[in-house]
Amino acid sequence: MIKIEKFVVNPLGENSYVAYDETGECVFIDPGFYYNEEFDEIKEFVSSNNLKPVAIVNTHCHFDHIMGVEWLRKKYGIPFLAHEADSFWVERAVEQGRMFGFEMNTVSPINNFLTEQENYAFGNSVFEVIHVPGHSPGHVCFYNKESDILLAGDVLFYGSIGRTDLPGGNYQELISGIKSKLFVLPDNTVVYSGHGPETKLGFEKSTNPFLT
Image (cartoon, rainbow, N blue to C red; front, side, top):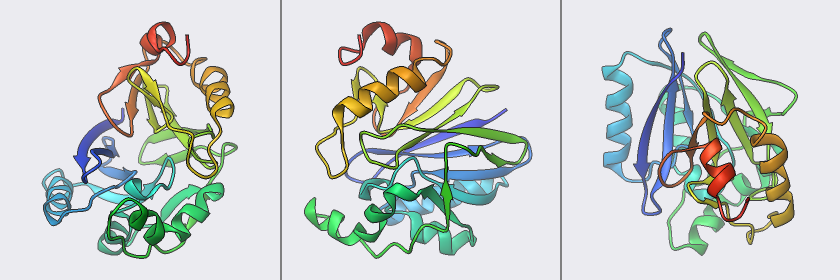
């Protein structure tokens, strides 16, 4: 079974996650760590739980979700995985941050690309990779049936959806993707979003004003 630990980080209140299972292997999802104390906190969590980091896997590559990528990649010697269609956001990391008033270091290119045709496995666990563009062209979600969890990034929030006004965004594409690819999953699936609290798919199906 996959366990999820959430860290609310950086000035934008981004949710960074560590997913791990009984083997001790773990992956960092959307690491937006920005302040030194945030890096100290994640380092302590990994150490105190005797975890073995194996990769960074991102739902998408907007700057607030990749602030901690280089530090983690160098600290643990692990690859950075994301969808190829979001490569341009990695290339523009410094520019992205500057637009919103943040100093960003250069982020090296994605090491390996995630695709909807291939699941992502670590330890004894498997994430189904679901491509849901609209917030960003390469946005993916990670679903694990056994644990009833969906790491939805900035596609779906408690009572809301991701913004679509940034380059590569598309409102109709986002709505269509949520309804056709996410809402077919079980209602009791817990949704871990890129910002804000957790929710459940069934609750969003019946109450989300953008989707009902």
